[in-house]
Image (cartoon, rainbow, N blue to C red):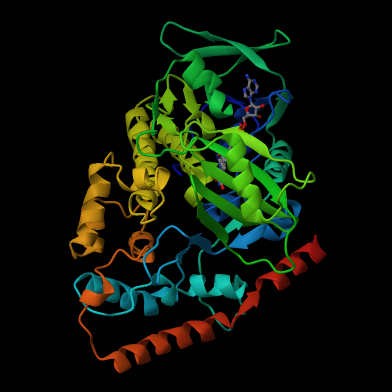
Amino acid sequence: MVMNVSIEPKKILILGGGTAGWMAANLMIKAWGKYGFEITLVESPDIGIIGVGEGSTPMLKSFMDSIGLDEKDWMPACNATYKLGIRFDGWSTKPGFPRYFHPFPAQIDDYTAPAFYYNSLARRNGLDVEGHPDHFFLNSYMAEEKRSPFAGENFPFTLLYGYHFDSGLLGEYLGEVARQRGVKHMQAKVTDTTINADGRIEAVIDDGGRVHKADYFVDCTGFRSTLLQEALRVPFEPYAENLFNDSAVVFPTPRPEEIAPQTISTALNSGWAWTIPLTSRIGNGYVYSSAYTTADEAERELRDFTGVGDSNEVEARHLKMKVGRVTKHWAGNCVAVGLSQGFIEPLEATALLLVQLTVQNFIWALETGNFTTEKRDWFNDDVNGRFEAVRDYIVAHYVVNSRADDGYWQDNANNDKVSRQLYDVISTWTSGKNLTDELKRQKNKDYYPTMSWHCLLAGYGIYPAKEGLQGRDAEKHQAKLNEIHEFIRRCSLNYTPHMELLKSQERRA
Ligand SMILES: Cc1cc2nc3c(=O)[nH]c(=O)nc-3n(C[C@H](O)[C@H](O)[C@H](O)COP(=O)(O)OP(=O)(O)OC[C@H]3O[C@@H](n4cnc5c(N)ncnc54)[C@H](O)[C@@H]3O)c2cc1C
């Protein structure tokens, strides 16, 4: 961050106290508290928060680190568990590829991933070699073995990990921290906004008639987008052509004794279901398209899938999702963060990552632009680029599916409304060319790394038919695979079992 001693104190008003609002409050008080900024968060308890969103990417660890929170403290308070990646079940019908794992990277991968990249390229070019990603990555193996991300100090190889958590508890925890660090907190519902001739917000007015003035307004009002979309009328660009899902049904179930550090994402008839393990329960949700099934049918399907049947003890919650993004995330003196700026369905749990990057970039853009609008276009282009990159990676999961079901899955597979970038990625893969080179050409690596794209396309088994492949020295090939497997197995033995670590955190809390 740029050190600028001449920064004048400003007033910031954050509207909305969901996870986005409290993440923004913490990042801003950390960056600007020292300059005497006055940061106030106003939220309406009557409206409440969305209360879903239980999985993260490794970026959440960097967020917690950046504001100085220790996972030994916050994890037990939020019923959190570790996450080494996501297992995808039933998205492909290709023989040998009924499921695959999208791992977060590990240092150890440097020894094993090259064989995977080599094999996947060779197999696309007709050689009969193992191309399933699960054979090559430490995190994929460790998730099944229910290992935590921590090894003893005699095994100094790190790996990236994310978390699963109770989103309501996480919001409360972050709220408590922000208040202790000086963020002012008010409960009120904003009912009006005054905007000056330049299109800047002067003040918001709450239902008690109080007027709240500020230099900058941060809209964290969820799907309502009270300031950016409603008051400033910034247009919303839906992704409905690319992503069909617009609804979800969710309910918890009891957790098993042992918890695997993975999200499971299972393809169902008209969408997919998440299975997210917390220390207190399993979070279940079915994300689906209302054009292909009804809310009642979706709930029935999720009840059957989770095995809870007609149990009255399970109460389902139904949600609508507004999928897409605003054209500009920063307009006038207002920036939208969280669901108010846009949402891409939670298949890769990317929403909080986008929250974090948006706030960090906003802080950077204001500071380096001396609190003018100098960096605003850069900021809006950058955030839009990130939304598009996440969207394309999610869309890829649908367009390469090989499920034979009528309707939803076939319409997804036949969807030709894909971006040029995604089209180029898929055709590079299917034409047997080097995907890493193509991703470099697209400068895509900042968003989804080459490993993620390889795991997705190989994990679906997008390869020439097995019968047409040329054989090779099967014995030598198997020996090499066994060597990789043994290497990964022995590395994994160094990592503490997941449950052991969670229990020790609970004991300490
Ligand atoms: C089905 C589903 C699954 C998801 N899964 C994931 C996931 O696995 N991982 C992930 O990272 N994300 C996930 N998300 C996204 C995640 O839930 C959100 O990004 C996150 O909760 C942040 O929400 P928010 O703070 O933007 O909005 P909200 O939680 O809706 O908060 C809005 C806030 O604004 C306040 N407010 C609104 N209007 C006013 C007003 N006029 N005056 C005062 N206050 C007001 C409300 O009271 C509330 O405090 C999921 C979302 C959905 C829909």
